Length: 427
Ligand SMILES: Cc1cc2nc3c(=O)[nH]c(=O)nc-3n(C[C@H](O)[C@H](O)[C@H](O)COP(=O)(O)OP(=O)(O)OC[C@H]3O[C@@H](n4cnc5c(N)ncnc54)[C@H](O)[C@@H]3O)c2cc1C
Ligand SMILES: NC(=O)c1ccc[n+]([C@@H]2O[C@H](COP(=O)([O-])OP(=O)(O)OC[C@H]3O[C@@H](n4cnc5c(N)ncnc54)[C@H](OP(=O)(O)O)[C@@H]3O)[C@@H](O)[C@H]2O)c1
Image 1 (spheres, helix red, strand yellow):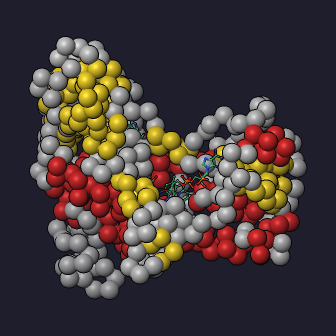
Image 2 (cartoon, helix red, strand yellow):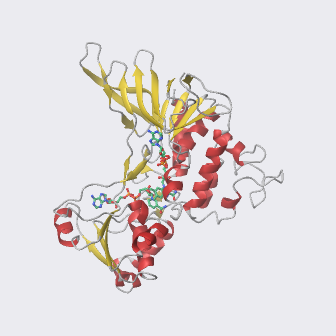
Image 3 (tube, helix red, strand yellow):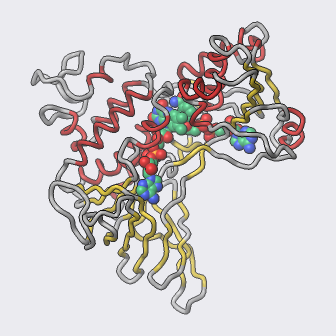
């Protein structure tokens, strides 16, 4: 064992699991592993402050109902213990009054969420506070050791299927854990906005960070001091529509010299409630974003909507980006790409003989495969990568709806359902 780390029960040289990342997915995995008595767990994150939702998206309106955040926070026994003044069961089976106060009479730590309309969305600050509260509780739970830092590398001993996990710690204090052994390495490493080079001869246009544009406060701070400003927004899903709404709100209040060009390669898609299931559950617009888009951006209402005073809509077919961008982007003071999220880099993996491992995710099981070297040293078959699992926005479940449409299930409660289903096989 090297160094310390923190947790109420000391540190170990070998852990039942190392969980990388303390966003909603990391919290989900730690809760599920603990419930199944997989411990001790070493939990590593660079900040332990709720992941991206808390760091970047507190002002974003949720596209899921407030009830689902309560369901998340009460889904496993270790969470219920943290949430409740006294250990309780889930909101479905715990006798409670309509305000969510356990019959013991003591309000639990979900009162802020419980005060919301459970059938509606809420600001993500509520969900973020809940994740931070669970993180703090888990940090104090026996069986959990936390270490602030980054997992930089993991080395697999193929003979024993054990991993040596190496940490880069920011403070390099003597009590820091720098390397441990484990047979389970759980990646909950998250994703960041895709920032690809723009196609076409449009280099040199300054970009504006999607994360900043998703925050009305940061957007206003950035744009208000500027003179007349033109911003081009690329994309047409949740992020793009929220950015358009934030920009429009600014233009129609304090910054009337703001012009917005909206470049979209498809018509707006909405989630639709079907008979017991949701069409486009993961890709369609939902909640107040969907309401705003329907009222203002659909072709039949756009010209009459006040948004058309500030927004120019430019539609194009996928594949025509080069010509369209060369024609419409010049003259923009900023370009915002709202074109999805890309996985953050994962720890470098290699075998103890020094062969680099490229992990391929299995979206059904939450596990990974890799190309195993055969005994004579030639390239072997795709085999299960021992002990490595993943969850969260970077490693979501692939789901098929009753119409056969395939999507990736991204959302707090979706992570919870998936991890509950597959983690019993995470051996
Ligand atoms: C704008 C936006 C709005 C969303 N709104 C909703 C919503 O309303 N409802 C909903 O249910 N879901 C929502 N989601 C989807 C999803 O719940 C969030 O994306 C969530 O933050 C994903 O959690 P995560 O734990 O997978 O990743 P993250 O929150 O990104 O957390 C990953 C963590 O891992 C750490 N990490 C990464 N690599 C390492 C390493 N090598 N070593 C140590 N630590 C590492 C990171 O620092 C970070 O703390 C939204 C997503 C976005 C982008
Ligand atoms: N709470 C909220 O309201 C909220 C807000 C933002 C995000 N989110 C969540 O965060 C996740 C990511 O959402 P997202 O909206 O950022 O991304 P997304 O759902 O992955 O959608 C990406 C969009 O970008 C388009 N696109 C991709 N590549 C492009 C390119 N090269 N040029 C032009 N357009 C391109 C896609 O169009 P094609 O389909 O044509 O490829 C699609 O419309 C989702 O889970 C979402 O629910 C939630």
